[in-house]
Image 1 (cartoon, rainbow, N blue to C red):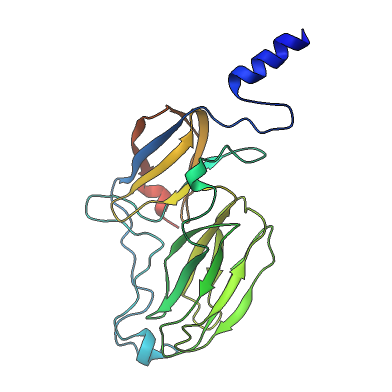
Image 2 (cartoon, rainbow, N blue to C red):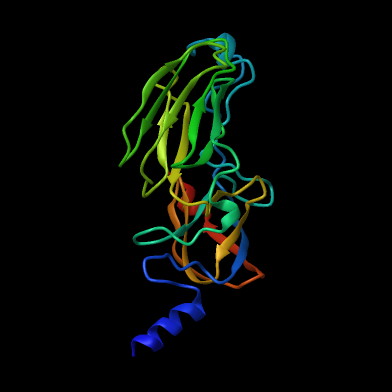
Amino acid sequence: MRSLLAFSMLVTGCLVGQTCLAQGWGTIKGKVVVDGTAPNLPPKVTKGDQTVKDANVCAVNGIPDKSITVNDKGELANCFVYLYLRRGTPDIHPDLKKPASDVVEFDQKGCEFLPHALVVRTDQKVKAISNDACGHNVHTYPLKNEAYNLLIGANDKTGALLEHSEAEPLPMQVTCDIHPWMRAYWFVVDHPYAVVTDAEGNFTIENLPEGEHDFRIWHERVGYIERGLEIEVKDGKVTDVGTIKVDAKDLEE
């Protein structure tokens, strides 16, 4: 019996005390769109409004409400799409063991946070900088990590490096206490299989371990768009999950 078990381990490439990696890797892609007409949101700050704080910076161009970023085709940006595991971490492709960059940049420009939706790994740092001629505040609201609440001065290109040691269960809100309309979302993960939909609502997650996996899709207005999206990842293949629709009514506050 022992010899049979040892043979089985050798065949699969797994030895006692070692992690068994996936035998193959694949990619998924898809698109998130609004089913119906998305709410037409007024701007957070109107162009030229001199009543807002730091109007000479914040009201120069006006500030749109990016809690819904949708184009004329109904394609929805800023949705977080990610591999979900109840516990532990997935097998990670050798090319993705380390992030492409140790630091991801988070800017403050025109009294907006850029980007509005950010994925950051636990082995990366967030560099919070400012390209504005006025000061801002970066205030995070995590569930598992230590919260940050710090001032980023005007035109501070050096900024501050922020670290997160634990993966968060959900994207966390980031605000500016000086300019209350400023809001963004960071999603801290401990694996590379999380992305944000682009301006056309597209998402692609590459080099996933083959097999059946659960994925989740989350948006700041809706919450979970998909909470148990089961997808079979096939070795060497790109699996197109097609169009995922969000009811326009779910985007209303």
